[in-house]
Length: 271
Image (cartoon, rainbow, N blue to C red):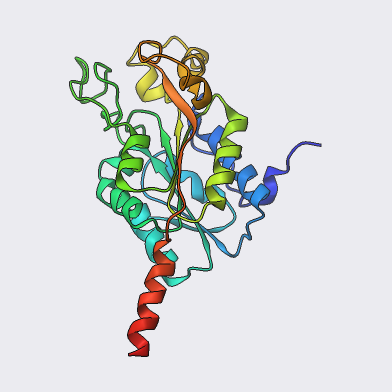
């Protein structure tokens, strides 16, 4: 028997608004399976997002959800976790939402190591708001605001998260659908700030401008560029050029922010 996704979907919310060929639906199904595997309670799980194609995801899910302002998903998620530490908090969004306007919130959540899982669907573009280039758009790629090619070097979200202090960092792709569930399951179970970047495809605003002939070609690009971390460790730097390393890239156990904050409050109250 197949997995019962409908148990986690709000009645009347489908079909979704994502374009044909968009990988966000694949990612949403992986998140649902991960939540089911961990056994999270609907009433004790909050799923938060900002603005963008990826940020529409919470609206379809039957949990305690917030669809907030652009780039502020992590800030709202932090408030929830501080006020209700017993809740499981998951934040979702895209590359523009997460590391452009939301970049400051992102790096400080990493630094604090607050117990939130942040799922970033990286399709290298502002898909919903006009196809502008984002901080992860590859150098030379075309967007509505870089019609002659993007001159900027892109962020590596995983390296940024590790450098800022996140204690669990993983990367997968929309092509590797079963891996998404495994990475998110481990991320949700981790006590601390967990970042899961999923490389995704946007056929409408990215694929067309960058001469991809079909969604299949975009998915094959994700498949061909991904190298599991175990294999990458045995490869030379030249072999890894143009590739992206996938899997659990970093994991560390450190004191979690809310727990440490509560200890501080108790010390102050004790005089």
